[in-house]
Image 1 (cartoon, rainbow, N blue to C red):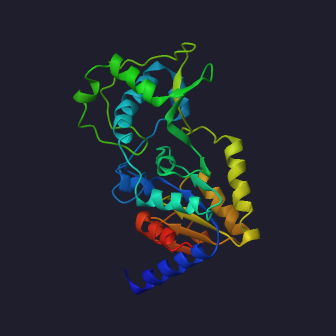
Image 2: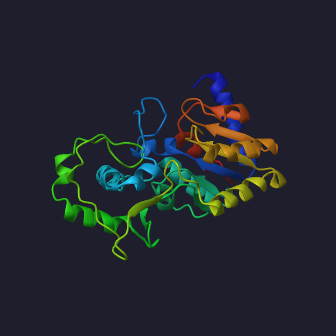
Image 3: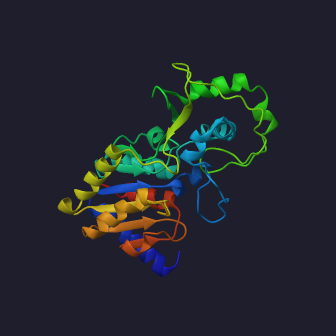
Length: 279
């Protein structure tokens, strides 16, 4: 670590040690758990399915669920890393009024974080688009395995992607089940591109960010390029109110101009350092 980066690291850490802060996390936080991120160095080029594509017809859903079935089989094996555990300790210590995550992997919850908004939902949940019944992804995974015996084994070499799916074109024979409650269309309970984040989630996040200046707080961004407005809006909101913003991410972000401190670094070590210095 250079003298300049060491200085920025120390100042950012000291800022967060002095005051409560809201954390906003992205895919870069989960790379140490073996889940690839979206736009970091070496990240694969991706073309995620949009909501409009998903609802357009059965072929698109077949393609989605075949890829997602394989990805889920791997993602569910991932364990929280040092960064997840550090944020959970900060939550338990009362130093973090709210943890906002753009991730759908559920690793924050598994690490023990409680004051949390999963902005884009959780891949472990499934929703019927017709009757709105919510069910477990684990149950659906078992159904998919039963309906598609040997599918995972035949495609074990497929490359993992950040969205919890894999690179795969051979999906024409994949069988997709319907909702057990009504026979409707099943979709993971996550926000696809082309969908809006539910207003109640956004409102809760804004409320937490808006409360920070009154308590001399801060906003920490960890592992997000802030490429989409769902996360960037909170950075803009905090900066407009005069709230310090600390960004820890490998590579540049769309929020760099609003940052009080920007660390071009991984998340785990920095967050563990912050959590270790809390009183």
